[in-house]
Length: 235
Image (cartoon, helix red, strand yellow):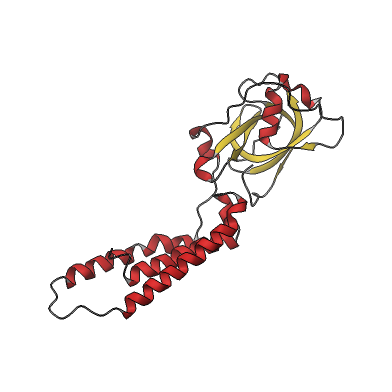
């Protein structure tokens, strides 16, 4: 109650609203939630700032307790503790937490995909790689042994989630709402020469589907290009 009804509480609320607006206007919020939630975050950030301002004004206008009030020391101690909460919130204005990366791939639940009725048409022959999500690649791989690829080259974009002999794992997270429900989709990339890109490095890989990958579908790479992380890191 002390934090909620004091200048510290009002200031904390205003800072929280400012953090939400900063993350939204810089598109950093897409590291944590779906892009379509941006407008709701703006409304929420403005509302929290207004609420914090009202609380701050009320606290500053409030009458001081009468002299000799027996709880002055307790009140001052509570307010002091409230101000300590400003430090981590203020830090978020300067440094935003990073997006999910390679560290969480082996520590999160995976998207479970198995073969079922045919749902994909065979890709038409083309010299231009077909760009697709990792999820579509994995779904095609498990559908009748990847027959729908038809030896057509494909292009996948994701981050490196660990080097392996002769290649590396390529991953990207699927989210329904926010990063809390994120699950990784992983593909094994083969045929790379030299050292693999470092973990969490975003790359675009071009190649063809290679059957027989077991739990992790395989992509025989022809090119691997390092790129900057996209604004929306999720599929």
